Length: 235
Image 1 (tube, helix red, strand yellow):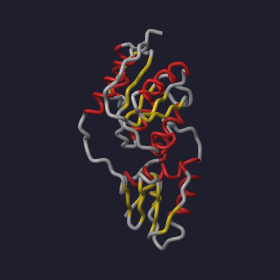
Image 2: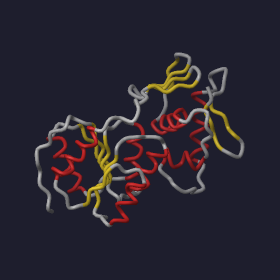
Image 3: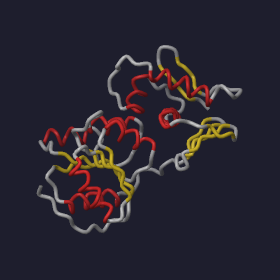
Image 4: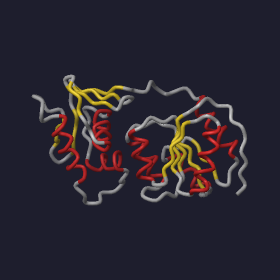
């Protein structure tokens, strides 16, 4: 493989790699860690999306061809969930139309394999130097419900609420889009990375579990069912 390591000069970042080829993944992982970055690596697209939705990253490096969920769908799901994390496609699919598809899906950059590690590092540096489009929210709220994204902590009326990772992600999406109806399809794409309707009741099941923890013990319901449309958080 025509790759070469060079020394990077960018500030330490927290980076997620979504790459199913173990040789490529280990090469990038080793190089980025040598530069002082904190790096997580996932071989499955769905697992990578779940991690990107439940953790805070400075950048994600995404292969197009991933098991579970392809790279384009992964980045589309992030953007649908209003997750602004910069995404670099790193893939052997390098035609002009493919690069256009990647950028239109929400990618910030597109690098074709085989690659030189120094170029990947430089592109990460370019992303790091871009000014943020807006101040990232670290606390989401609705009424007396608060979600601390940094501490991964949810409270209502000062009482802690213990949520499973997928429940946390579902509530985060609803809170980020507070006051707006979220259809079943929108939630499937944003939380589970499913961009079609597979005739599953996973959304309904998780909404029910979420209500049992967030609403039922309290006087006022925050999660509303909009009949024939979807779900909404008010407050």
